[in-house]
Image (cartoon, rainbow, N blue to C red; front, side):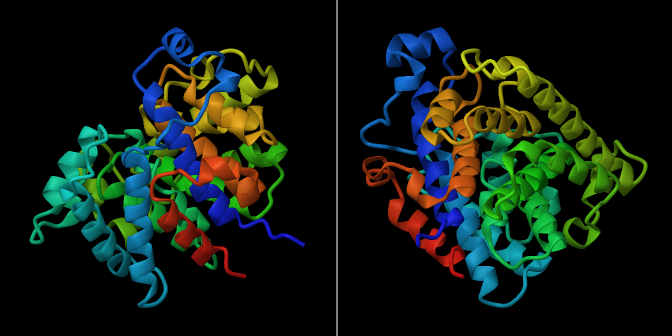
Amino acid sequence: MTTKRPATGALIGLALGDALGFPTEFHDVPSILATSGPWREMRLPRPAVVTDDTQMTLALARGIRTAAEHGRPAPLRLTRPVREEFVDWYHSPDNNRAPGSTCLRACRLLDDPARDWRDASQLGSKGCGANMRVVPVGLVPGWTEEERAGAAQLQSALTHGHPTALAASDLTAYAVRLLADGTEVTGLVGRLRSYALHHRATYHERWLGDLWARSASDPSPEAFAARGWDECLAVLDRLAAALKHPAPELDPCLATGEGWIAEEALATALHCFLLFPDEPLTALRRAACTAGDSDSIACLTGAFAGAHLGADVWPRDWEGRIEYRDELLAFGALWDRP
């Protein structure tokens, strides 16, 4: 009897999607087709180099592992090592994969140890850099719902403090957890929508402190949170409408957005995954052949597919040449332990 190993499947799928989408990012679909041929036949590049999406996912994973050595997840316990890992990534010579400007700006500010992290957070940004790296939060076993939600929003807020970035990160981690736990894909969007409605007025003050007040846009923390959840609910409605009339040959970005912003990255990745829930490579290829932020869309698509189907769905020859393979497998083994 084989085990599913959803953490390994999600992390390898994330990196494979990232590497497949790296060459197609910033190109429109006709240009991608002209270069790569039919999208259903796209091949993994040699070498399979990833972007800052996988690099920052691993940075977050390392921070989580360090925090776990000292007990249950808690705001201060998690903030310190994750902040250090983000700053280390900022200074790394391998940080040369077209990283997002928000992450760079925030990490430069986080590099000052005397600065409160909330003063580094970019409250005007809801770029997808917040949720393209959050997958580890959804994979760690044994966390409570409050711990998972708080950790997902905190890691987002270190760089992207916009309430929609926080909500989209929370939803992404929740989707990964649901799929890892075996939730039926037919009910996934409904579960996510119910979660968003239930938490619409929830502000995680224990994790975020007075972040909300620094935006100067909302009269209360509840209003701050609701602004983000409402944008996520709107894009989930667009996703549900698109899935009623599936059109796999059309660019999914036309229905759910190009993925440069957090809620659209989540929705379009879910769109690609749910078009082909039992065909993970087809889902990855559809995600990589998009007019939007192809690497981020594809990395989240791969994470959803791997969490749903497990580690054995990925071809060995693809897995074998992915960059950072050993570290990805190590975290997968850590979080797949029974």
